[in-house]
Length: 623
Image 1 (cartoon, rainbow, N blue to C red):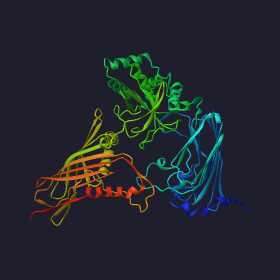
Image 2: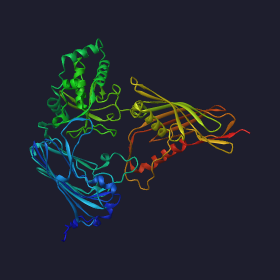
Image 3: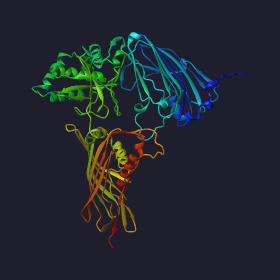
């Protein structure tokens, strides 16, 4: 019996241009996405994707998947695997795809499912041809398009076409497109397309910004849309906010009479708005827990407040809305607010009205400002904006319409860490130390969860935190979480053998024992990407160092100071007496988005910080 293999000469891996292989783990040979918006309630998406995987690091770029739910139907999904010479080695039909829930581990209701290709290669390179067709009544979400998938992926050809009814109000927005992306745009009435060819891979470099900040991306929308069976129309954020309130929020705030009376009794005679809000916020934290709700319109519309009250759980929309309903009982106004949550700050796009945001918080008017509440957390202090929602444009949804407002911005000086402590060096080089580390601003968010660490977690964490101290032993750890002033203090007592190196009647050790920058940014001969310092901060250290008797100082690091556009660094060493030093250190790092040409200067600054952080003192034993 003779087996005949089909061959696709267009996708022979050897024919890929060397330029596209450079810095690439995968090469997208062809990506075609065709949207047909035939009405406000009808969208068809056809997708063909051909990608050559060059090595194991490129496996994540197969990206052969589709999602479905009651309003999104997969009409076609299939794939073909080719070897390096373009020969077919496997044909995959829908029954061969994995079909799984998109549950996140917190969902109590979830109708969202995914169908995806799971393939284990026997050799590299190989090529995947993936084709799908999806139909949905949801026209509120048109996925953004980029001619490049991510870092270390290049593209031979990428195309997006959109056919639409002109009365729907189709709009688009392009960002970060440069001549090197080789894109061509075509517009005719009812049709739009973008084509890009031969886009080289971008390599990730230390401190590179989040990919979406520098990648070329096109956003699409229709002004007349449908969301899970609810029609909408919006040209401005004011109109969108009013639609959202009228259709998804209004009427959801009803509460049982018993709960209303309980809240009235809780508030009592308190008249101060913020004090009232603080009481109710604690009530919500004590009563509820977070779960995810992903059923139909429930992905966008809050659960009824009375259901949250009964069940004691909800998602971000439900818990924010429940808190709003409780505040409303005692006359405190508040508003559901859409935000992009995440440590990388992302704004609601002020100039592009569309379905945006992935999280909901609550805003309370406070004069000309707002108080922001994260209602999904049982531990976040009242009015504290953690790293996932601070300093970004959000959409406040009011009955009269939507409004874009920026959330709390913590200045670099507010993101502070103050370390006050002491350590004793014995004649044998052993160390015994106490230190108190107080964190505020974004550094509070980085640290306060440590109070919930187990004993083993504490041991692992602090040995890593003080990784410059070998043979470290933790003697005692305690925490003070001041939720009123939003400060978290870590009190640590520790010891270590041979912290100071002993040789020929001398002791040598690094003076900065506790907050040591031991590494510097990687060097690049030709840096390509801009770089970003996502969060600035200010560290201040004041450490008393007790030297062993019978020794005198032979060499002591010099005081040092440097200032530039990236930050400020200063050290000072004070001799209190022959056996006592006070080491003072201040490091101020600024937020910033910088061009690639600035990287060497920034790297030098961090290198100088590291060098001085690791400066050593030498003691000589008296004769």
